[in-house]
Image 1: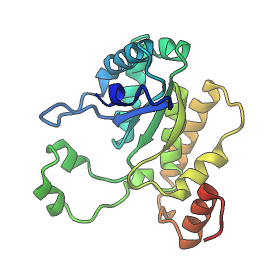
Image 2: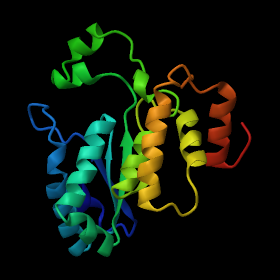
Image 3: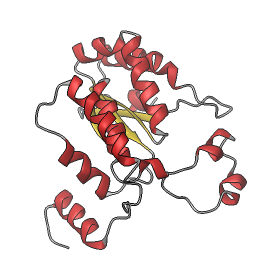
Image 4: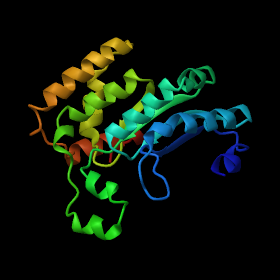
Length: 205
């Protein structure tokens, strides 16, 4: 419905959805991402100006499974031929137990404060981003729990043209390093937040 309502606006569309692809019972099915990609391809062929298909707001494991499902189904190549890029924005917060329980609001409250997963601190999340790119993601960022710190680390870890083989190797190195680097703060300072906003809007605040 959203695609139908917007395809006549003449604006590019980025279709992004919760990466675990949960059903009505809130159970994750990221392995069905190939089916979702097929539907996006059909919409593109019918005139929708779709430029990217994204998976976001889910644990990095689910995002990776979704991207791998798109590639293993053969749909990834069709997306590239149609000019549709893949995007990945995973959560860094440790809420797996609550999510697996079905998004019960009371359980969210009882679970206590939301904290970043220990294995995603430091360069931990950057390693996952390299894995996303190695299986086809062009756009890569972070969702809940990710800060300008991780985005800067991701940018600094990349070269202009990095082959997939190198991305896979870098992912392994970064994930390994993060196990010894979990004490690095992932809370952005006020200066970093101001710098990010300044970059986005082109003015000093």
